[in-house]
Image (cartoon, rainbow, N blue to C red; front, side, top):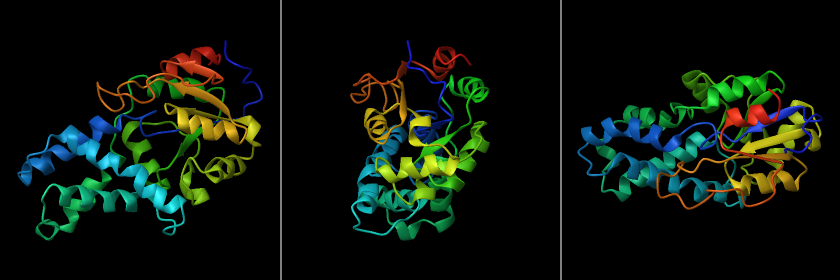
Length: 241
């Protein structure tokens, strides 16, 4: 049984991987570009290469090696690196194409259970993304996928990237609740651990295919999170929504 969630005033959701399927979405958006430029790269492999630069690029901001920049900027820099790593001459591609491909991260399909689960959870709790994505990206993603957020919070309002404590704490402050009255819903154990460390409640949603059929990370709950579920609809069931 889940811990008592009656004091919780806000549910924050990790988004990439927890709510939306980034891998298949990015691959779908990249495929026409790869064909047009005759790149002999599988679209799913391209998505994996791009995503592999996600954490290292944010770590440079976390460590103070560079000033805060939005995730859209990091994604664009990482896109250019992936293209160069695959032998592409960036000067041969018009900037409009790169801009459009970079917004692949704004056009990702929700997991099949996400819309129903979020809609039901919203009946009882205010909900919003607590994501490393910037606000404009989260807005576009919500419009694309029909995500029924009440508010968008997370990295941009704190100018920090998870799992830095400021990202969670400034989110709680922004929505008007102490950390003990906020819960993070996420498919990533490290995210939940950082949230718990500042006082958040924790909900683990298993997404065993986020990284494809051979995924080896986050395939199970690695701690006694307050609630562990297979889907967001199961979370709604458990929380009486």
